[in-house]
Amino acid sequence: MSFESMYAYIAKKEPLCVQNDRIDDALFKEYGVNRGLRDLNGKGVLTGLTRISDVISFKEVNGERIPIDGELWYRGYNVKTLISSLNGEFGFEKTAYLLIFGQMPSDDELKEFKGILSSSRKLPDDFTRDVIMKASTHDIMNSMTRSILTLASYDPATNSGVLSDSIRQCLFLLAVFPMLAVYGYHAYNHYVNYESMYIHRPNPKLSTAENFLYMLRPDGQYTDLEAKVLDVALMLHMEHGGGNNSTFTTRVITSSGSDTYSTMAAAMSSLKGPKHGGANIKVMEMMRNIRDNVSDTSDCDALRDYLSKILDKQAFDRKGLIYGLGHAVYSISDPREGIFKGYVEKLAKAKGREKDLELYLNVERIGPELIAEKRHIFKGVSPNVDFYSGFVYEMLGIPQELFTPLFAIARIAGWSAHRIEELVGSGKIIRPAYKSVMEKIM
Image 1 (cartoon, rainbow, N blue to C red):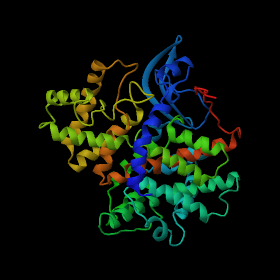
Image 2 (cartoon, rainbow, N blue to C red; image 1 turned 60 degrees about the vertical axis):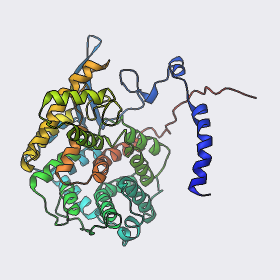
Image 3 (tube, rainbow, N blue to C red; image 1 turned 30 degrees about the vertical axis):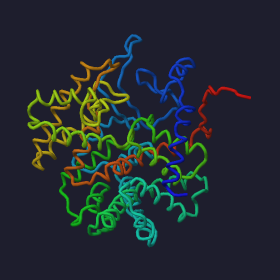
Image 4 (cartoon, rainbow, N blue to C red; image 1 turned 120 degrees about the vertical axis):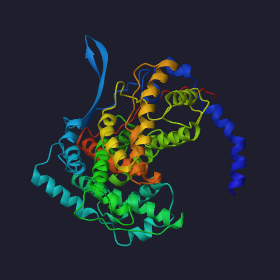
């Protein structure tokens, strides 16, 4: 059957899906079911326990929830403290060790861990040619997911179910994710965009952030500031409390007894959803739209008027959202954004992008004021980490096709920690309940 015939058939049948699969909002209230596992205040339904990380946005005072500046903790360490204590070093590998093994490494343990990652940055023979370069696509998340599933075919212990094999597989994927992303992009750029092909093997002496820039850029060159800013971005994205879609996916798939490669492929499929991993792309699109429609972006009155139109669904994508502002958990502030902002300002100055930074700062100030005026909200609105991350990636010359894959390169550390915790834990398969509201016919 041709695509045209199939779509003609679906055009007739799609209304049946809309008619028979829509569930009235009143039924959710009647049975006490929270849409998206979140109540009206955005608080998630408790589905598990974890020692890996924590997200804090409120404190209990005399039985009342009081909003506070957001906090993000990895294994008992405040992320703000972790980053402020780097002393010019790269922190992604050290933090990955902390998340996966549950404690801070000694100098010798960190050196050994970096050596393991470095020696693991090697794909099977001809894998780049036979897998990554075949059927190249602009959707690098799909390209990576295909590669992850194919790598399972090269591992004789894929389905062993032994914890040590799962840990080894997690560390291997942590090491090769940057290669899968960058090589996938270069294949797309060559075969689809008709540009030159560059495949640089990772340098064993470089960090994850350095190797990403080294492999991406034709000349392999980067500044120390560029690599340090990317390193911090990876640290801020590697884990977020467990209560997010892709991490929950990791726990669910792991609980079924599935293998590491299938679990991480499922997490990738979750992350690529625009409601989860693609928010920074929407911020970039919105900012371009603002520049196209506000002649002087330093004119705060004109900017306020246009942002008001965006909120009123009269401009940009007409969804009524100022992207990058607000978060499902944080209210007063997103700690990741607060940490990242200082690095953004340094990079913008180094790149001569102060005028663009001014636009971001103005939207960050004006946007929450307008949202408070126009919307009935249950908590405060503040910029989240995605507000600036796309701007940073653009300044680093990273193509938009790699924005979400960069998120995955970071988050594989958190997914790995949660997979291991689930394997060591209860051993129970996660089976949520659904209440049937089906009408019985016969």
